[in-house]
Image 1 (tube, rainbow, N blue to C red):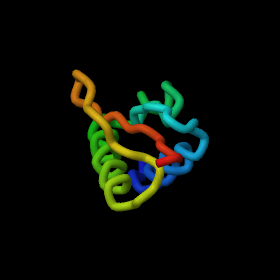
Image 2 (image 1 turned 30 degrees about the vertical axis):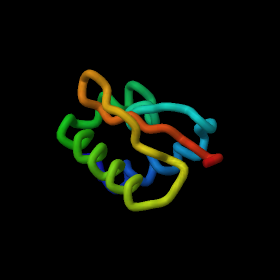
Image 3 (image 1 turned 30 degrees about the horizontal axis):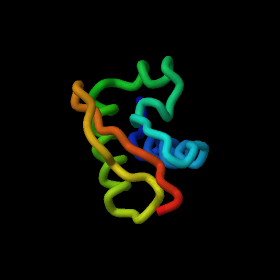
Image 4 (image 1 turned 90 degrees about the vertical axis):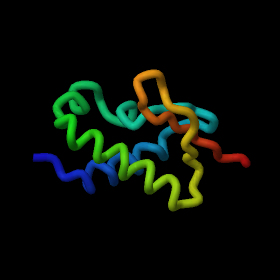
Length: 80
């Protein structure tokens, strides 16, 4: 069983390793095989939690447009 709060903490920590200007999806913050093991329902909830976290904090991660498959894209912007 996956703890969505633990997954969220891991995703937030992984954003520290992104370069300025880098565009990503939440799933990019995990290894492919690990992401595929997370149940779809948990992945959707993680996406909602990550977006809420980004919107509530004034950090370097900003939501940008959605993909054609309705996945939220983000960009790390350090120098604003």
